[in-house]
Each structure stands twice: as C-alpha cells, then as structure tokens.
Image (cartoon, rainbow, N blue to C red; front, side):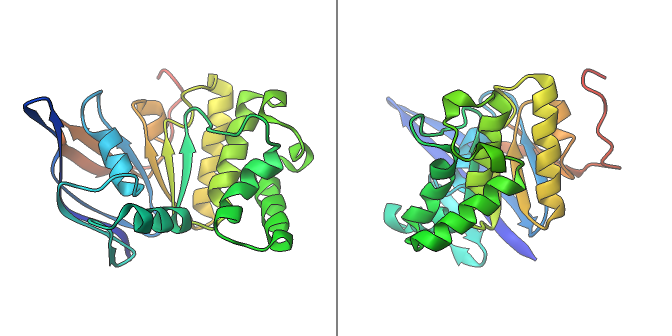
Amino acid sequence: MNIINLENITKIYQVGSEEVHALDGVSLKIDRNEYVAIMGPSGSGKSTLMNILGCLDTPTEGKYDLKGTDVSDMSDNALAEVRNREIGFVFQTFNLLPRATSFHNVELPLIYAGIPAARRHEMAEVALSSVGLKDRMLHKPSELSGGQRQRVAVARALVIGPSIILADEPTGNLDSKTGEDIMTLFHEIYEQGNTIILVTHEEYIANHAKRVIRLLDGKVESDKQVANHTVPARGK
C-alpha cells in the first residue's frame, strides 16, 4: 500500500533573476514498511526532495499524496500538523535541546501534540528504552556520547508513532563504529514494521536500505531494489 505518492514534482527557486530547478518532474511511490535510501551528489535535489517529503516545503508544481491526502498546497499551519503527526525526523546534527534531559527532549513532540503528562512520561520512557537508553533518561546531551545523542534523536522521532522516519545523513557526525551501531538500530526499527527514508551521499550507508533512489540534476536517475541486501564491509 502506497504511503507516499509523488506525481511530477517540480521545485523552482528564484535566485535573483534566474530560476533554479531543484526538482524537475520527480515521480515515485513508497509503500508502507519500505526502507528507502535517497542518494545523489551535491546539487542533485536530494535535500529539496527530503524537505518536500517531510512537509517542510511544498512543490512549485505536481502532487504529493501522503497516506491518501494531498499535502501539495497546504498552509504552513496545516503542514505543521501533518508533520508533527506523521513524520519523525532524525538529523545529522541531532538537534537536541542542550539544557534539556534525554527524557525531556523525547517528550517534546508529545507536548506539542497535547498528550496528557502521565501518558507522555510513559511514552517517552518506552521510546528511550527501545533505543537502549533507559539508564540515560536524566542525562543532558553534553553528558552523552555522539552515538547516544543520536539514539535520543531516534527515540524522539519514534515516540509519536509516525508513519515515516525521515533520516538526513544520520551517521554524518559519528565515527564508523558508532555509525554502524546506529544503522543496526535503523534496521531493527524497520523490522518492527516502520517506513524509513534515508538521505545520504554515502554508498555504504545507502546499502543498508532495501531500495536506492538516485537523483541527478533534480531528476530520478535510477530507482532499484538492493539485490540481496547484503551490506559490504566499509571501504570494500
């Protein structure tokens, strides 16, 4: 079942007197419980596509159906509601509140969603436990390793029960061993029935996914299933 359906998505930015086509007629479908990597060089349009998929931006032309709802030309407030309900974000830079504990960072989306305190506390604890941080709930980001901070970010993405986990270069600030641990965590999350869209420029990271979409000059250059989903050793 399609959870995402993009039809002829075009995004044009005005730079001075020049029009820049960041995306040019992109069409693709993503099913529920797919694990997809989006790849491309700098300027390929992958960040713009991520922003549209994440309801952070709208297309200039084309249609974006998310779970059967056209979100292509929604207002900013309506997009924010969809974003908070349907999409969990994981960023390269973690985007954690530095003075808040792990628990309060994970609880934040639940506060925005208006969930009662007792239920929020339970959900945040479950989310942190699911990423192996039950014993780090009261630690602030400065008291955590890079891998632990990213796990907090993953827990925050999961806590609301989103339809899609959208991860932008999630291992970019991590060493290779910690990055591999985070990718193992993403695989576990996928195996639990979640839909994951991973934006990366690293072939090795993309090979953890089941499907790889490559962009070039704002267009889909290729869209292929990963043959046997065997992840090669880094650097091989």
